[in-house]
Length: 138
Image (cartoon, rainbow, N blue to C red; front, side):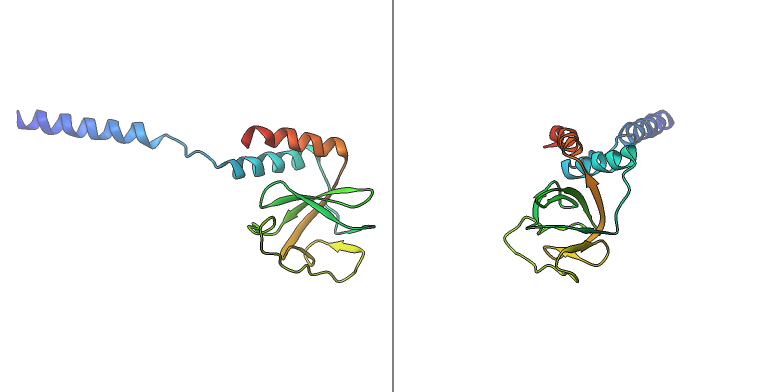
C-alpha cells in the first residue's frame, strides 16, 4: 500500500510539472509592437542610411521606447535607437548631440539623449502601415 501511494504521488507531481512547463510567457505590448516593426523592416527590405540631410525643424512621434518617426518639411524617417530610450517622450529633456546642424547621423548623433542605431526612410503609406500593425497592441 505504501508503494502504491508513493507511486501515485510521483505520477501526480510529474503530471503537474509537465502541464505547467509548456506554457509560454506572454509578451508585453511594447515588445509586441517592437516585434511587429522589426518584421515590417525585414519584410519591406528597408535599407538603413548612415546619414540624412534635413531642412527646417525636426519633429518626432514616439512609437515605442525603441522606435520613433522623425519628420522635417518634406520627408519622414523611422529611427531605431541603439538602446531602449525610456525618456524619449518624458518630462526630462536630454540635449541632442549633433556634429552638423543639418545632418542626422546614425551611431553618432542622439535624439533626446538617445543614440541612433539606424535611420530608415519611409513613405506616408509605410507610416500608415506601421501604425496599423501596432494598433492592436495598444
